[in-house]
Image (cartoon, rainbow, N blue to C red; front, side, top):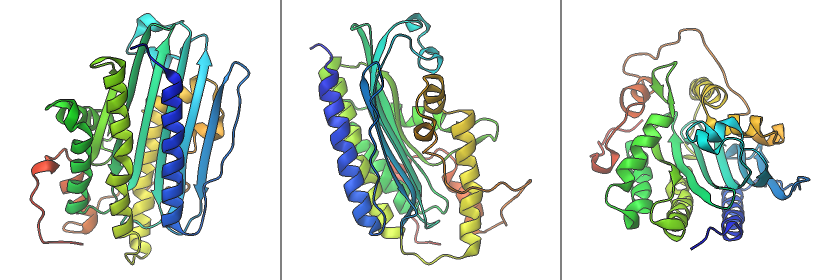
Length: 306
Protein backbone atom coordinates (compact mmCIF):
# COMPACT_ATOMS: atom_id res chain seq x y z
CA UNK A 1 0.00 0.00 0.00
CA UNK A 2 1.19 3.53 -0.77
CA UNK A 3 2.29 5.64 2.19
CA UNK A 4 -0.51 7.87 3.51
CA UNK A 5 0.72 10.76 5.61
CA UNK A 6 -2.84 11.84 6.47
CA UNK A 7 -3.39 8.68 8.53
CA UNK A 8 -0.09 9.26 10.30
CA UNK A 9 -0.79 12.87 11.24
CA UNK A 10 -4.24 11.84 12.49
CA UNK A 11 -2.70 9.18 14.73
CA UNK A 12 0.05 11.50 16.04
CA UNK A 13 -2.46 14.25 16.86
CA UNK A 14 -4.70 11.76 18.65
CA UNK A 15 -1.76 10.41 20.64
CA UNK A 16 -0.76 13.95 21.60
CA UNK A 17 -4.25 14.62 22.93
CA UNK A 18 -4.42 11.38 24.94
CA UNK A 19 -1.01 11.86 26.52
CA UNK A 20 -1.62 15.50 27.42
CA UNK A 21 -5.06 14.81 28.92
CA UNK A 22 -3.78 11.85 30.94
CA UNK A 23 -0.68 13.52 32.34
CA UNK A 24 -2.32 16.80 33.25
CA UNK A 25 -5.00 14.84 35.11
CA UNK A 26 -2.26 13.04 37.08
CA UNK A 27 -0.49 16.34 37.74
CA UNK A 28 -3.70 17.90 39.05
CA UNK A 29 -2.40 21.46 39.00
CA UNK A 30 -1.09 22.63 35.61
CA UNK A 31 -2.43 22.07 32.11
CA UNK A 32 -0.78 21.73 28.74
CA UNK A 33 -0.89 24.88 26.64
CA UNK A 34 -1.74 24.57 22.97
CA UNK A 35 -0.46 26.69 20.09
CA UNK A 36 -0.73 26.26 16.35
CA UNK A 37 1.60 27.56 13.67
CA UNK A 38 0.99 27.15 9.94
CA UNK A 39 4.18 27.49 7.85
CA UNK A 40 3.91 29.27 4.52
CA UNK A 41 4.75 26.12 2.58
CA UNK A 42 2.08 24.05 4.34
CA UNK A 43 1.84 21.71 7.29
CA UNK A 44 1.23 22.40 10.97
CA UNK A 45 3.26 22.83 14.14
CA UNK A 46 1.33 22.24 17.38
CA UNK A 47 3.47 22.42 20.52
CA UNK A 48 1.86 21.66 23.88
CA UNK A 49 3.77 22.62 27.04
CA UNK A 50 3.11 22.13 30.75
CA UNK A 51 5.25 24.14 33.18
CA UNK A 52 5.46 24.32 36.97
CA UNK A 53 3.01 21.54 37.75
CA UNK A 54 2.60 19.74 41.05
CA UNK A 55 4.34 16.62 39.76
CA UNK A 56 5.63 17.63 36.32
CA UNK A 57 8.13 20.47 36.33
CA UNK A 58 8.28 20.61 32.54
CA UNK A 59 6.31 18.56 30.07
CA UNK A 60 6.40 18.98 26.29
CA UNK A 61 4.32 17.00 23.79
CA UNK A 62 4.87 18.40 20.32
CA UNK A 63 3.39 17.61 16.94
CA UNK A 64 4.74 18.79 13.61
CA UNK A 65 3.83 18.23 9.99
CA UNK A 66 6.39 19.84 7.72
CA UNK A 67 6.94 20.17 3.99
CA UNK A 68 10.23 21.25 2.48
CA UNK A 69 12.27 21.33 -0.71
CA UNK A 70 15.48 20.09 0.92
CA UNK A 71 16.11 17.72 3.84
CA UNK A 72 18.35 19.14 6.59
CA UNK A 73 21.80 17.48 6.95
CA UNK A 74 20.78 15.79 10.23
CA UNK A 75 18.13 13.85 8.28
CA UNK A 76 20.46 12.72 5.49
CA UNK A 77 23.71 11.86 7.29
CA UNK A 78 22.76 8.16 7.24
CA UNK A 79 21.23 8.40 3.74
CA UNK A 80 23.33 10.86 1.72
CA UNK A 81 21.56 9.88 -1.50
CA UNK A 82 18.49 11.78 -0.24
CA UNK A 83 20.35 15.07 0.18
CA UNK A 84 18.84 17.98 -1.69
CA UNK A 85 15.49 16.29 -2.28
CA UNK A 86 12.03 17.53 -1.34
CA UNK A 87 10.27 15.89 1.58
CA UNK A 88 7.21 15.72 3.78
CA UNK A 89 7.50 14.73 7.43
CA UNK A 90 5.29 14.17 10.45
CA UNK A 91 6.47 13.74 14.01
CA UNK A 92 5.42 13.68 17.64
CA UNK A 93 8.00 14.13 20.38
CA UNK A 94 7.62 14.33 24.13
CA UNK A 95 9.62 14.84 27.29
CA UNK A 96 8.55 14.72 30.94
CA UNK A 97 10.85 16.28 33.53
CA UNK A 98 9.31 15.39 36.91
CA UNK A 99 9.42 17.44 40.09
CA UNK A 100 10.21 14.47 42.33
CA UNK A 101 13.78 13.10 41.95
CA UNK A 102 12.45 9.59 42.53
CA UNK A 103 10.44 9.83 39.28
CA UNK A 104 12.49 9.30 36.10
CA UNK A 105 12.53 11.61 33.13
CA UNK A 106 10.72 10.12 30.14
CA UNK A 107 11.40 10.82 26.47
CA UNK A 108 9.61 9.47 23.40
CA UNK A 109 9.28 10.35 19.75
CA UNK A 110 7.77 8.94 16.58
CA UNK A 111 8.44 10.24 13.10
CA UNK A 112 7.74 9.62 9.42
CA UNK A 113 9.56 10.91 6.35
CA UNK A 114 8.55 10.61 2.73
CA UNK A 115 10.92 11.88 0.03
CA UNK A 116 9.64 12.70 -3.44
CA UNK A 117 6.63 10.38 -3.03
CA UNK A 118 8.76 7.26 -3.33
CA UNK A 119 11.19 6.85 -0.43
CA UNK A 120 9.74 6.71 3.06
CA UNK A 121 10.57 5.44 6.51
CA UNK A 122 9.45 5.53 10.14
CA UNK A 123 11.55 6.04 13.24
CA UNK A 124 11.30 6.74 16.95
CA UNK A 125 11.16 4.99 20.29
CA UNK A 126 11.11 5.73 24.01
CA UNK A 127 13.69 5.76 26.77
CA UNK A 128 13.83 6.37 30.53
CA UNK A 129 16.31 8.39 32.57
CA UNK A 130 16.13 7.69 36.32
CA UNK A 131 17.88 9.72 39.00
CA UNK A 132 17.33 7.13 41.73
CA UNK A 133 17.01 3.63 40.34
CA UNK A 134 14.28 1.16 41.23
CA UNK A 135 14.74 -2.30 39.80
CA UNK A 136 11.01 -2.98 39.54
CA UNK A 137 10.56 0.23 37.51
CA UNK A 138 13.28 -0.76 35.05
CA UNK A 139 11.77 -4.24 34.69
CA UNK A 140 8.29 -2.80 34.10
CA UNK A 141 9.58 -0.29 31.54
CA UNK A 142 11.35 -2.93 29.50
CA UNK A 143 8.48 -5.41 29.72
CA UNK A 144 6.24 -2.75 28.15
CA UNK A 145 8.89 -2.15 25.49
CA UNK A 146 8.94 -5.87 24.78
CA UNK A 147 5.14 -5.99 24.56
CA UNK A 148 5.22 -3.18 21.99
CA UNK A 149 7.45 -5.35 19.77
CA UNK A 150 6.03 -8.83 20.28
CA UNK A 151 3.79 -9.00 17.21
CA UNK A 152 6.54 -7.84 14.88
CA UNK A 153 9.22 -10.50 15.24
CA UNK A 154 11.09 -12.40 17.92
CA UNK A 155 14.23 -10.28 17.76
CA UNK A 156 12.67 -6.83 17.32
CA UNK A 157 12.81 -5.91 21.00
CA UNK A 158 16.46 -6.98 21.34
CA UNK A 159 17.37 -5.13 18.16
CA UNK A 160 15.62 -1.90 19.17
CA UNK A 161 16.92 -2.12 22.75
CA UNK A 162 20.51 -2.35 21.54
CA UNK A 163 20.01 0.58 19.18
CA UNK A 164 18.57 2.56 22.07
CA UNK A 165 21.53 1.72 24.32
CA UNK A 166 23.92 2.69 21.53
CA UNK A 167 22.18 5.96 20.62
CA UNK A 168 21.41 7.40 24.06
CA UNK A 169 25.04 7.33 25.09
CA UNK A 170 27.24 10.26 26.07
CA UNK A 171 30.51 9.24 24.43
CA UNK A 172 32.34 12.24 25.91
CA UNK A 173 31.36 10.94 29.37
CA UNK A 174 31.61 7.24 28.53
CA UNK A 175 28.19 6.95 30.11
CA UNK A 176 24.62 5.93 29.11
CA UNK A 177 21.93 8.57 29.48
CA UNK A 178 19.61 6.20 31.32
CA UNK A 179 18.21 2.67 31.19
CA UNK A 180 17.22 2.79 27.53
CA UNK A 181 14.11 1.30 25.99
CA UNK A 182 13.44 1.21 22.24
CA UNK A 183 14.96 3.04 19.28
CA UNK A 184 14.35 2.39 15.59
CA UNK A 185 15.28 4.29 12.47
CA UNK A 186 14.83 4.02 8.69
CA UNK A 187 12.09 1.48 9.42
CA UNK A 188 10.28 0.05 6.36
CA UNK A 189 10.04 -3.57 7.48
CA UNK A 190 7.05 -5.46 6.06
CA UNK A 191 5.86 -2.53 3.98
CA UNK A 192 3.93 0.59 4.92
CA UNK A 193 1.02 -0.99 6.80
CA UNK A 194 3.23 -3.21 8.93
CA UNK A 195 5.71 -0.40 9.64
CA UNK A 196 2.90 1.98 10.59
CA UNK A 197 1.37 -0.69 12.84
CA UNK A 198 4.72 -1.12 14.62
CA UNK A 199 5.03 2.64 15.07
CA UNK A 200 1.51 2.79 16.54
CA UNK A 201 2.30 -0.08 18.88
CA UNK A 202 5.31 1.79 20.24
CA UNK A 203 3.20 4.93 20.64
CA UNK A 204 0.38 3.04 22.36
CA UNK A 205 2.80 1.63 24.96
CA UNK A 206 4.25 4.97 26.08
CA UNK A 207 1.63 5.65 28.76
CA UNK A 208 1.39 2.04 30.00
CA UNK A 209 5.18 2.10 30.40
CA UNK A 210 5.49 5.46 32.17
CA UNK A 211 2.24 6.13 33.99
CA UNK A 212 2.52 3.41 36.69
CA UNK A 213 6.05 4.60 37.52
CA UNK A 214 4.96 8.24 37.75
CA UNK A 215 1.98 7.38 39.95
CA UNK A 216 4.04 5.11 42.22
CA UNK A 217 6.92 7.54 42.84
CA UNK A 218 5.46 11.06 42.58
CA UNK A 219 4.61 11.42 46.29
CA UNK A 220 7.78 9.92 47.82
CA UNK A 221 9.25 12.46 50.28
CA UNK A 222 12.58 13.96 49.21
CA UNK A 223 14.97 16.63 50.42
CA UNK A 224 17.68 18.99 49.26
CA UNK A 225 20.18 16.18 48.67
CA UNK A 226 17.88 14.34 46.22
CA UNK A 227 16.91 17.54 44.46
CA UNK A 228 20.56 18.55 44.10
CA UNK A 229 21.44 15.18 42.54
CA UNK A 230 18.46 15.41 40.18
CA UNK A 231 19.69 18.80 38.91
CA UNK A 232 23.22 17.44 38.51
CA UNK A 233 21.99 14.49 36.46
CA UNK A 234 19.79 16.82 34.39
CA UNK A 235 23.02 18.43 33.29
CA UNK A 236 23.85 15.17 31.52
CA UNK A 237 20.46 15.30 29.81
CA UNK A 238 21.17 18.82 28.57
CA UNK A 239 24.59 17.75 27.30
CA UNK A 240 23.07 14.96 25.26
CA UNK A 241 20.38 17.17 23.74
CA UNK A 242 22.80 19.90 22.73
CA UNK A 243 25.87 17.87 21.74
CA UNK A 244 24.52 14.59 20.35
CA UNK A 245 20.79 14.43 19.65
CA UNK A 246 19.92 14.33 15.95
CA UNK A 247 16.41 15.60 16.62
CA UNK A 248 17.72 18.83 18.14
CA UNK A 249 20.13 19.33 15.22
CA UNK A 250 17.33 18.59 12.75
CA UNK A 251 15.13 21.22 14.38
CA UNK A 252 17.86 23.85 14.35
CA UNK A 253 18.91 23.09 10.76
CA UNK A 254 15.35 23.07 9.42
CA UNK A 255 14.58 26.52 10.77
CA UNK A 256 11.86 25.37 13.14
CA UNK A 257 10.68 27.68 15.91
CA UNK A 258 13.50 27.71 18.45
CA UNK A 259 11.14 27.68 21.46
CA UNK A 260 9.71 24.39 20.23
CA UNK A 261 13.10 22.86 19.42
CA UNK A 262 14.46 23.55 22.91
CA UNK A 263 11.27 22.88 24.87
CA UNK A 264 12.65 19.43 25.73
CA UNK A 265 15.43 20.96 27.82
CA UNK A 266 15.08 20.69 31.60
CA UNK A 267 13.95 23.98 33.18
CA UNK A 268 16.77 23.76 35.75
CA UNK A 269 20.07 21.86 35.70
CA UNK A 270 23.41 21.97 37.49
CA UNK A 271 27.06 21.14 36.78
CA UNK A 272 29.70 20.34 39.42
CA UNK A 273 33.40 19.98 38.83
CA UNK A 274 34.68 16.39 39.08
CA UNK A 275 31.92 15.26 41.44
CA UNK A 276 31.81 11.62 42.57
CA UNK A 277 29.05 9.87 44.58
CA UNK A 278 29.79 8.51 48.03
CA UNK A 279 30.54 4.76 47.95
CA UNK A 280 27.50 2.69 48.93
CA UNK A 281 25.10 5.60 48.48
CA UNK A 282 21.84 5.56 46.46
CA UNK A 283 23.56 7.93 44.03
CA UNK A 284 26.44 5.49 43.54
CA UNK A 285 23.94 2.69 42.97
CA UNK A 286 22.55 4.55 39.94
CA UNK A 287 25.98 4.33 38.29
CA UNK A 288 26.74 0.79 39.44
CA UNK A 289 23.48 -0.83 38.28
CA UNK A 290 21.28 1.44 36.19
CA UNK A 291 23.77 3.29 34.00
CA UNK A 292 24.91 0.05 32.44
CA UNK A 293 23.12 -2.00 29.75
CA UNK A 294 21.19 -4.73 31.56
CA UNK A 295 18.95 -7.64 30.61
CA UNK A 296 15.92 -6.18 32.40
CA UNK A 297 13.49 -8.76 31.00
CA UNK A 298 15.24 -11.50 32.98
CA UNK A 299 16.24 -9.38 35.96
CA UNK A 300 15.33 -10.74 39.39
CA UNK A 301 14.26 -7.82 41.55
CA UNK A 302 16.02 -7.78 44.92
CA UNK A 303 14.29 -6.88 48.17
CA UNK A 304 16.55 -3.87 48.78
CA UNK A 305 14.97 -0.48 48.10
CA UNK A 306 16.09 3.08 48.64
